[in-house]
Image 1 (cartoon, rainbow, N blue to C red):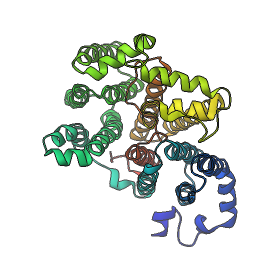
Image 2: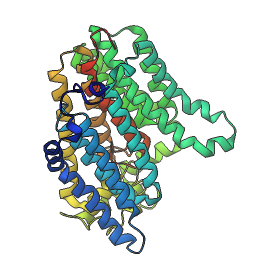
Image 3: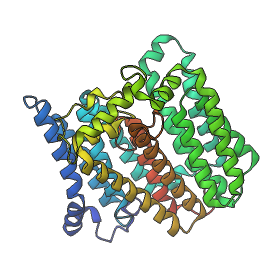
Image 4: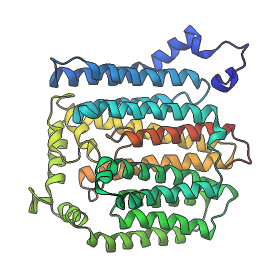
Length: 411
């Protein structure tokens, strides 16, 4: 049992109890606690100084959970988990700033994701699903929002957003695991392409362009690294762009987004309002920002989900945005490092899929905030106020890191 939990025998010193190991971990996590606890304390001081500082305690408890998980997973990648904790710390501060009533919800999902991460690393056999089961989960996550709409209205109002978020995150995580399983033997079969295309079409027809685009991007990125013809991948990508262009006319909100992106100043109080407010927030941040809790990022529509980068830019400034982007770059780079060093083919493609998933989400979210692309519903991984998403990414991280313990026949 001790070996299963800590990766060592019962006679070895348990790393969780060694004082020198704790000191090394504390030095590694000092910047994480400084950003999380310090940022939430500043938000509390600037927004609700007369209330009890429960939010600061929430943030500290979650980050302490990361520290404990790091000690339990002693011997794994020493940089990847602290970098993840730093991103989560920024996310907790932004949740407290933009939606203080949702901080406990977000923290609970983060803790659940931490539990899944440790379980995936130490008991990886529980994630050894066959390809058929993973494909079924991919389709189930894509179909769930459709099925939920068929229920009575009261049920839809009670948990409609939660079902959509769960379906989206299940689809994203499953497409990574499933693409790695399909490419484990160096081939992509016709049924696999059909299932993947069906999942993409379901999200596209729902008007969830960001989720569909992420599924396409992850599949193409993993397939490209595996070596299929570039011409075929370019044809698939071009077909998706054409299909998305044809579908968007059926959804008024997508038409408004494209119109507001093409010329936001033509209707600054209508279709162009989200982009205009996002650009104002980025400009108002300047070099170092107004400080956590001292700005007005709540004026940016959907600042707690897909426009979080604009909120970070206003209160943390250019320095904060650069630091956040660098943290994402380190996360993606360490994940690709795992892919290069992986001894098992499945682990290699799973790491590539996880890296492409996070990189694609960050690009879509940042491009929507700055006007590089039309605004989408893509959220910043680990940072935006979508607790389900945080849990999904943490579990995926555990699956990738712990996959090295799975026998070659697993998948």
